[in-house]
Image (cartoon, rainbow, N blue to C red):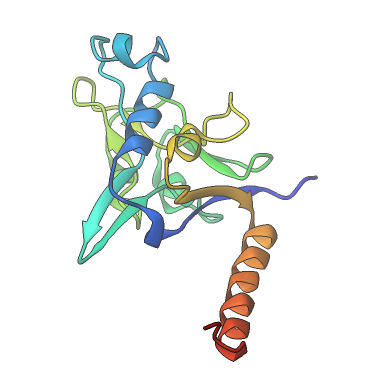
Length: 171
């Protein structure tokens, strides 16, 4: 079984352009086209949020928890864990709009369709090689990698930084 990929965030690269949010909403629209999606009903919903705190813009995404609180509290099984893909999914046909998942999510990542009270959440764009938010980010603040590859790249950046402190300064 291949290792599951995660979406990692490099906060220092996010400029708060919200391209990821737009791409997410368009990907989850009927038309998958920005101009057509604007007039769709129901209005396409984004499944991630760019929040601003102090001097950082932070894309906040569903972490697809192993022991997902949102799935645990769902009385109908509408929110459930897909073990094969390593994601927490949501079946809108089973959702009764009780919003227990909204209350249980520690990251505030369950959204609600205002017109129906049905919840929506990140599904990591199953029809794509990489999630739409990752592909849309112009500054490459979002990365879709296996955890060990991301960690190795981070360690490499730390090593480069440490070594550069010991190299003689060029004049």
